[in-house]
Amino acid sequence: MKIFEDERIYDDSDVELDLIAPKNKRAQWRHRRVGPAFVKFGRRVKYIGTDLNTYVEQSRISPIG
Image 1 (tube, rainbow, N blue to C red):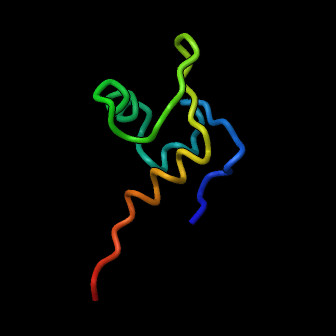
Image 2 (cartoon, rainbow, N blue to C red):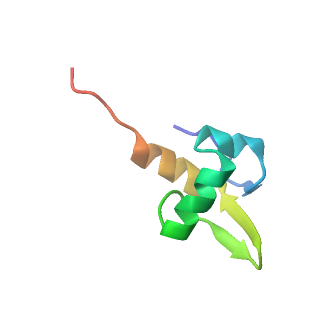
């Protein structure tokens, strides 16, 4: 399942990332080293589309039915 564009680099302020969690929650996750992988350039935080899709897939829950 691909929700995010694989080749795109998302900025932390991009509204698409709110599908995963609000901006302040993502900041808490980064501090605690949980959540999707990210890259920092100084103070700028970026997310790579493939990392976001990997995180979504790993968070997927498939109920046994």
